[in-house]
Length: 226
Image (cartoon, rainbow, N blue to C red; front, side, top):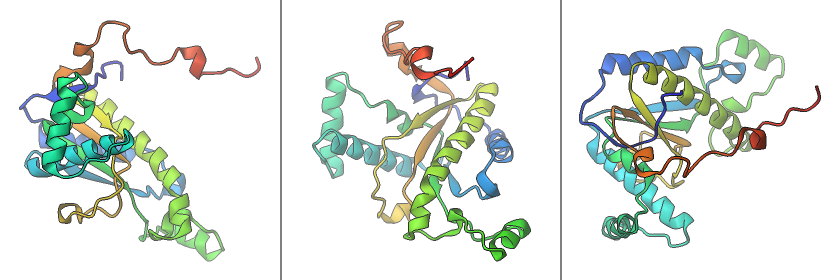
């Protein structure tokens, strides 16, 4: 991950599909999961999904406007809002969605095809939150676990991509409303978005050295005892 840089714009060059699939399989194989349920879906929008990616970008922009207290809807109004942001040098980092060859949407899911061990445990009275359908209280309880494991999967994928000199970026500015027909394949709203491709322009290109650093190590990591 030491090669990681947040991408603002990706090159037109598209990573080899076999390499992307290999990296995804690596992440699937090496990401641990509580009780082996992997209660999340990984939807990959390929290079041909230009319209969906553009609409995805504007859904993120709508969410940004909502969070900032001025919920803007409709493409024309959002494009005007975008122009004002760029004019004020507040270009959204997730504008990389527009140019990313691959965009990955991670959602929570319910596991319905249980393995033999899981079945035997349930028959003995065990209850697993990952097996309950959306709308049930236990499905909501399983969201934290899905979110954690999604982060682990995405990080494993990122590591493998970076080893192939393929850049990745993360997006978490996400709306909860996904009722449009083009998103009907989603079983729930995305918990994380990940962009994959060859970087052209990076966020650090627009920052002075030391301008936007993460908190110091000792502010985050607290060693208790000897």
